[in-house]
Image (cartoon, rainbow, N blue to C red):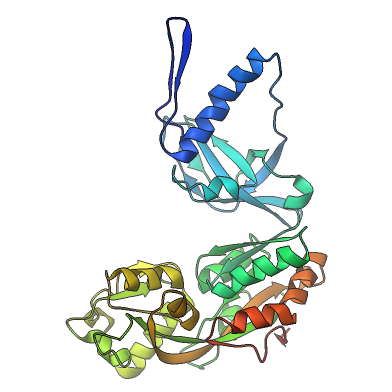
Length: 363
């Protein structure tokens, strides 16, 4: 899977092939059955893809009894090729377009473990794959601009981001399964961003902290603010449905800090336990009307034409292990961050302060 249901048969000496309706299933079924058939009829041999050993960056659970074709991105971390699973739905075409390789999980296996070595069929050139820059952590629209500008200026390099929250990014650095982490974690005791968490989670690792931006966080509401939400205090109103960010995200940490500061019980907020993983998903939920409000960044609110109630300005940093900082691909990335084209595009979104962007603020 994906690839079900596929029909193979013969009617009146005519081959019959029925492909699944979902695009990924149809593509994989066609490659496994149609392609070999056509090549054989034409007297051609199907060229096997190059296979390499890779290590899983995440644990993946698979259904026993089905062979799974897992689409993955690849990255070279300390000389080891790591595999990062992409969306597994049969209708998610982008997961195949973006994939660097396919991993087959045998039908008698219930998945693969973190760090496990497996075979991967390459869909991209290995040298190009080694130029991938893996960034894991907090989501921001700035990362999309950074990826696009990097491709425009240095087409051999690609920024691959995984949005798992600020804490997830630091843990990925600790486990050595990412090149960079993005984070905006507020320490409630000191009022400082990121440094206390870095010291606690990565005490032995030499790191360089580069500021990417300061950004506005606030409450995203529908145009016209129909529920008249003016601040955090209003989230406890009985007629307001809220949507939260996932545990470990910097936005969630900020919300909990503000609630505690105001003496508000999180359980008094309708929807506090309902979670999304990106600012855009929160903005989408508000736009669709399934919720009335959600905490997020101004640029996400503007992207969905929502109104915005500011609550805080935060520091959003990139954490770079010292051993990667001087590498060509990281230097190319920093060149883009410090470029005028990148700055101009980011500022056009609104809600960003780039006065410290690209500067090393701790090493």
